[in-house]
Image 1 (cartoon, rainbow, N blue to C red):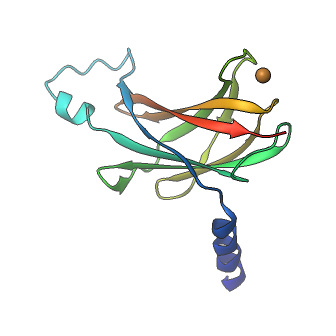
Image 2 (spheres, rainbow, N blue to C red; image 1 turned 90 degrees about the vertical axis):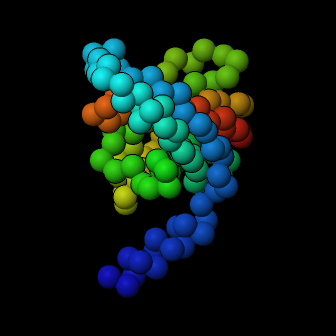
Length: 142
Ligand SMILES: [Cu+2]
């Protein structure tokens, strides 16, 4: 048990910088047409922070993604979180990384980038009320 906690701590210390704090775009799913005047709640901003390990991922190598999702300072739990990785100025298609909730409001998963350069991670946050997304810019090295 202790060992496991130690492992987590050291992992955290080696974690890269905060790549981005993004504000949300609230885009409720088309199928979810609740139009009951609850628009204030729907317009609340999510705080999405994307970190990578290593801090600057290498092209062609696995990187770990750690995405924290907060709403009004509270962790957003049991959401479906996925990343769509897209190269900024080039079409490499879409690389989807599905994350799992490692602890409340913190989602992790692994993926890789085929090429060095500037990338955008589109973070999708799926909940019952709809899907929201945020974008984070990432730099990938050789
Ligand atoms: Cu490219």
